[in-house]
Length: 235
Image (cartoon, rainbow, N blue to C red; front, side):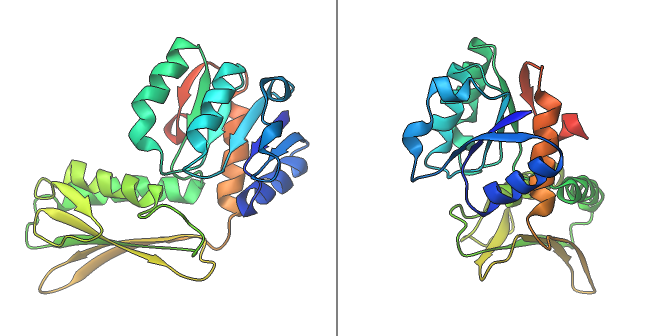
């Protein structure tokens, strides 16, 4: 495949390394220093785009790829309030988007475990549930997209939790403690606490390679397809 990388920070460089290992070609690398190169003509030279930029640029980048009829894998988070508009535009333009708050295979297995555990814990009202997520200091969105996905899974299964918050602590709220420190790739902990014991599940990424590999596999998956896809389709 010929790949356009939209966002060439640490994740973009990891994606490039894995894409080259898998015998793909990077034909366009866009960051804040050369944003003028993100043109329809340049995008149309690629087979697929992989987007790991910022919450401030991701919407524009998606729309440019839809205009160029270029399938796009979106790994940036912090834009899902606009998802319905993007979904409508993708359908209108017969485009292709693969989106996920996390492309790691391990995280997506963890999400399955999280949903199942929450379903089991729904009837045990003596347990309260909370979450902690830890990321590197460069991450712009708080809480992370992965944390929001995990939180929504819990809320969908546990009837006594109505919403999530990073500031408010009350019986109907799933509290998310968000920590930014060092160069932590990503740690997510869901904890059920009662007077007699705790039940805790955790996913801890050791590096960015799992996220990058998943994004490249997603790009391979959507080539030749139309529509909107997620990791559930891939797995």
